[in-house]
Image 1: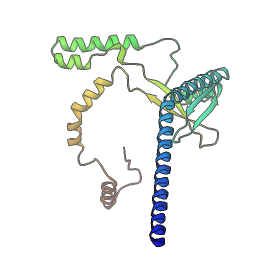
Image 2: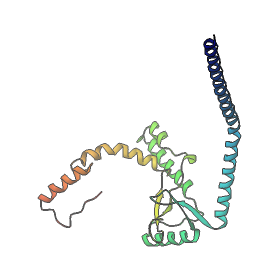
Image 3: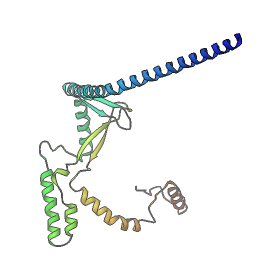
Image 4: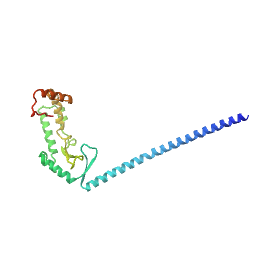
Length: 226
């Protein structure tokens, strides 16, 4: 009888311990779920608040940059930004333009409207004499809200002494881009065929061509064009 009672008592203790463990895990799961629910419910306002504060910070930063007469620009061949003075950019830009004598400042005069008008008139004249089709005319015609004048800007070379500027010409939305692309698509197959023997498309072909040229008494004044 004593052994039976002892055995029964041990079973009761095991059941009690197991039940307590189950209750503990249940309470822990409830706590985790409750915490996640509160976090999900409160995450949306926090995200909105962060976005709002971020936008305010950007506005303040832009205002301070303008107030200091500075320019914040992504640097050339790097992931960092460069903060420089407007007068330094203007000085280096003038030196570059005076050196190459290719570009000039147009001031407040905008040549874009006149360029759009003349280009569309030229396309219309070609259409009237039936040198281009109606589809080609509609494809190449310029819409004023889709174009902008080509412009020159600079990327600072922050990795070099004195921070020189790299000139970049942006003409992706120039009025004549569609005409240029159309002519390239039209003439590219013919050009590739005519220049097949003198065109190099890989490093291996370049080395091979140089070896062949060297066997034919290549001179020092020979020019290679890319």
